[in-house]
Length: 295
Image 1 (spheres, rainbow, N blue to C red):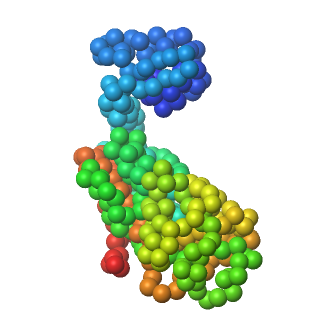
Image 2: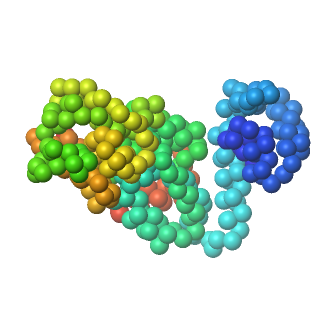
């Protein structure tokens, strides 16, 4: 299972062998043995690429679950009876989650020290949905709403949108910016293909203001978006929580008119989860209770 997961994630036998600290030949033999025992090919191999077959895609979430259960079983031997233990993988975007991530992780370490938490960064909303569905993630911070019947979610916070401008932009001196005044500006957004809630919010807000934004560059990391703004590449629509992290050369300015909000949420699969996941969800409601939603 471990060998299969490594090849499935690397899609390269050489890289997987390095990751597993073994030679490539015995790794290939291990995969062949697994395929024979299952009666199905798991990979399409060529001299130039390795791809998962339909059977491989079907096996991957179960293989991850098997290894996860083995780790939990080993942990159970060492943890006193009655203590909650296990491992969780939590996806997050980056600086956008700075108000939610630290209090939750600190509370988890204090309340459940036997839960091992792995943080996976730069996970956009739609990517988070796919990884939650496949079992690669147990929980993820997302932008709401989430369009999937297989995913549960809860509102954590709402932040009003503003705009990050280069310091030499003609509108930086104002107390607030009307979005329509940025119709001729170049925007920097997360990639459309990444399924980012921030990208969708930018497009929707500009459309409501009567124009379609000209996108100068797409960058997945929110802090790098602000760095490009500081470099004079364009402007960016971002929630107010990032105001404290704006780099030199850029300024955060609120939007005028009717406020537009980014809805930050926590998401998880509708499939039954571990005791560790349920403990995390219960704890999250105490640490970050859902606010009354502003429409």
